[in-house]
Structure formats: C-alpha cells, structure tokens
Length: 281
Image (cartoon, rainbow, N blue to C red; front, side, top):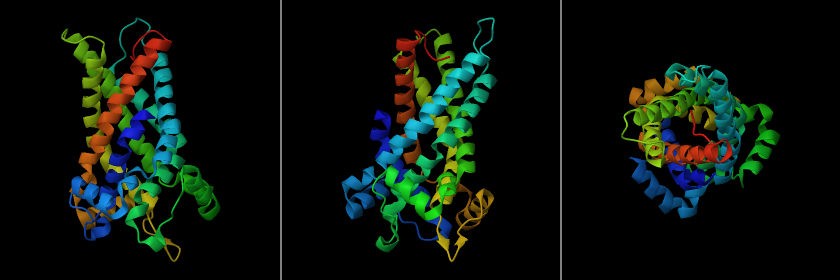
C-alpha cells in the first residue's frame, strides 16, 4: 500500500504516455517529463494522484492474492529433498499466481485506468469518478457488471507474464547472488534482485499493458466499440503507430515497477521472517 502511494504519479504518467498518439493522432506528450509538466500545468499537482483509491484497491485485491498464491504454490512445489525449486518451477508458480490475482484485481484495474486517463479527455466527456468505489458503482449501473472485467484477457496475460518474470526472476536472482558468496540474504541482495526483476518485467510486459490500457479506456460511438478485442488493438496499433509504440511509456513504467518491486519484496521478506521465520524461496 505504501509503495502504491509513492509510485501513483508515475503510474498516471505511464497511462497517459500509453494513450498519447493513439490511432496515429498527434502525440499529446513528447516524453515522460513533458507529460509530467503538461499534467501539472493544465490539471494541477493534485491531479498526479488521481486514481489513488483505485490503485490502493488494486493492491488489496490483485497484489495480495498473487503473493499469497505464489507462496502457497511454491510450498506445494518445493522438492522433498530440500533442494531449491527449479527456475522453471518458479516461473510456473508465478504465472499461476499472476493469473488468479489478475482475475481478482481487474475491476480495480478498470477503475484505475479510467480515473488516471480521465484528465486527457475534453471536460464534457470526462467521467469524473470521485473514488474507486464510486467508479465501480457507476460502471455497474451505467454499463453492467461485465464491464468490471473489460480487458480481463490481456490483464490476465500481462499478469502471468509479469509474475513469471517478477516472482521467478526475483527468486532466481537472489539465489544466484547469494551463491556467489559476496552477498548474504539481506536487504542488499533483496534490493538488487528486485531491481533485476523489475527491469525484466518492464521489458516483457509493457506491450500487453498498452493493449490492456487501450481496451479499458476505449470509446463507444453509436454502439460500436473502438476495438473488437485484443488482436484488433494489436493490429490497429501496429498499422498506425509502428511496433515501437508497444514500448511507449517504458521509462515511467520501469520507474513505477522498479521501486514498487523493491519495496514489495523487501516488505514481503521482512513479513515472512516475522511470521514464519524464513525468507522467500
């Protein structure tokens, strides 16, 4: 939760960058710093924290579920001979945890994306959600409960890829660092392993994140949605903006995911030692 409060402005900038130039239109922001300047100037500093309640709700549902499921899965998959689980096992456990967590967290994700992107719309088209619960309540009344899970497929796909990379790579990186003999199982090795994990996560998951963001914010004109599905988003984005557009917003994505990964794993390591007396596997 604390990590979310710290990185929320970066998350908002990431969303705005991913939507800038959508469909081949003129880009609203040249880069992440330009986005920060434009948002602060046009909407005010407090606007950087739009969607904070939805971000906290996402952590309470998605992150809590995936970390809990990962620990349970790793305990079940742990070899009986006491040896560390293989890297492949860690990746599979991460994918399972991510998929289950994403299903639980998609409603909060939809609210978050809409709230962080609202300021880019003309005043007459803004939804103006007061908080995450207001957003979910209005979505339910105005669009139906199915909309809570709009973009669920790419959300699950992103979560499976991200968690396989984040959880699996963290465990593997920490194991490799400790085996060198230069590092101990402490905050230093946890921080370095988290940073490695965060960078890999960013590189492999951001194309899916952009696809998800555009699906969850798409407009509907005369009953016709802007995109028909995941592959339609990919096809239209590729044609109008080029393949590199799938890594649009890489800097804020990494600046958000990197610190968030570090804070999350350091806290989780401490929590594990306080509760079960051992570190993450």
